[in-house]
Image (tube, rainbow, N blue to C red):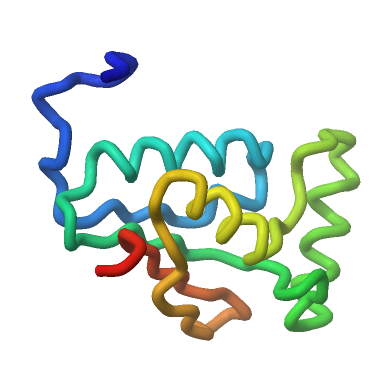
Length: 118
């Protein structure tokens, strides 16, 4: 077993809640978040990700398109709204799947991920 995290924490969390960070991080951090969730979440518990996302490459609103353009104007390549499909792909690598996608106020989404098959 890998020891990049404290083994005493393995499968000790009922929920991991991640708010408004995926728009300003590289997709590799998304991968790392899913990797952490795989080790830290109890078997039947959830990772909740909240924020603005693209869906199938499309922006859900003009304001999200504008927000993405503002983020990208900072000149940092990794900044910008991530696509739900990219999060699903990262989750699947670690035995997680998108259980529910909920539209929220202010053009955001709640993405609820859990272990595949549970």
